[in-house]
Length: 155
Image (cartoon, rainbow, N blue to C red; front, side, top):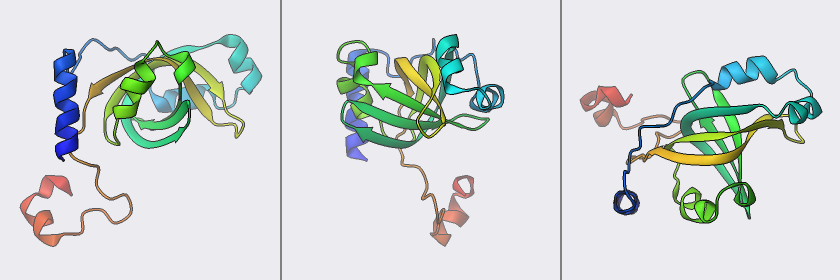
């Protein structure tokens, strides 16, 4: 918990820790409904640019690139965040400090991975909200009965 508070304090020293000028233009489920049937080469030719926002659910770092799955109110979509596609220093300073549960906004182009999953190749990233508490356990949920009774909003 203290490391998260230190990260939030570092964000506050940089400026506005909770920016409010990001506008999304698409939802994850709408993108899946519209472009899942498209071929990967056609998506690459069209160069469809989108802006989405959502909560970080999974994160897989692979050297100079990271695959992040975000979830918005409609569903989930995968992001491809590469150091070479972002402005200088953003990948090392910002993306490295993100945790599960943080809410981010991204801008990028749609493409399909080798496994044929619809993905956004990000060109701009922005942390919208820092999660101060970790997400609940994925498989078991909230198991402490006392907490479930006293803090019903958590269950």
